[in-house]
Length: 470
Image (cartoon, rainbow, N blue to C red; front, side, top):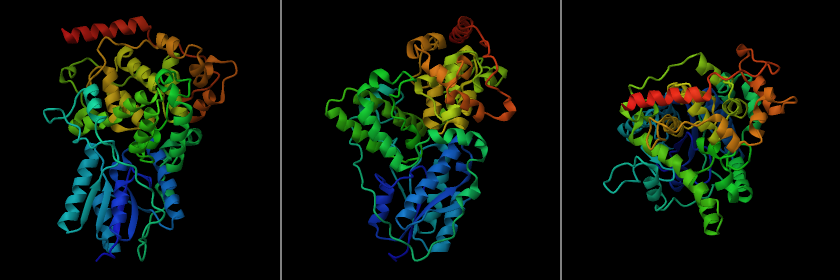
């Protein structure tokens, strides 16, 4: 029955071009029913990420409607929801793009078992990464634990070719009933912060492609030397679009490789930074406890502080360290945070404030619109010193000296901290519109004094690390 439709289960792959699953589905000649599920795994993500995902779903649904197709929305556990859709439509089975975190793997394994038991199509396809986590192996056939050799192996691989976007999809004879996206209220937990963050988002495949072109034409040449300066528009900002699959990493790779072949000096560094994303997923696939446990077991006895009033000051951007506070407020206003600022904010929490990295990881997961569970976990453990290929324990970023080096004219700090200016810019004032009213933070309040002297905090951390080492 070649006229039986296929269900295309979209997740974090909300695009049409460079889509292996979609290309394979079109090759079958069957009618196609695109579906997005709000399952428990998706319900569990943080407030900002869930809101931003909702925007992406809306954009993708509109693109499909523009082609004469639809995106069917259903809420509930994946196995049951897909089984009901198959019963309603007579579908031959389901196709989807792979995910690699533990919760998604467990869910997808259950779905595949259900479909195969019923004799139905159950196909998973790549498209989330440059290479599948099991494809990049050491000489001994195992996973990598250090980035440099991983990167050398990855860049020697043939990255998947680009695939055209279809102009139309084969339609089923009838459509199943769909939920209404607005009824899901995916942005409810953002409250008033959604309106503040919205202008800073570039939602959907078209916006992602435009963003890539602008980066290549305007900023790639200076990327290597300018990427660490948060006040300088030097980065691609494509992490947001990669998170929701609005652009394929292969497209970014091939575009940057083309520029490198043409002699663009910034392309090599940019490609290696793109490789870090694959490395994070390589690690979390092979070592799933990375997201919840110290990678290095000898850190299990380290005297981390749990959540505290100091951590709450950090969350609110009120530590009294301008570079740290600017970073935290940038996240509240824009939904993202510059990578250099992420390292400074994370180092301050885990070292100067001696707070467990999981406290920070959870807050980033709730507040970042470009939240990526693998990169978030690897980054926090790298800074804390407990992770794979981590910074040495004695590397403690000093927010003041980092600010002098990477924000010498205080442009970034003034951009997001209203208390530092007589006439604060709009983005600095937006922070007070974004935060919960319960915090009772006002723009005319005095800027707080530092939680701890930087030299004292550094020494306290060093003493604890030395005791742990002994």
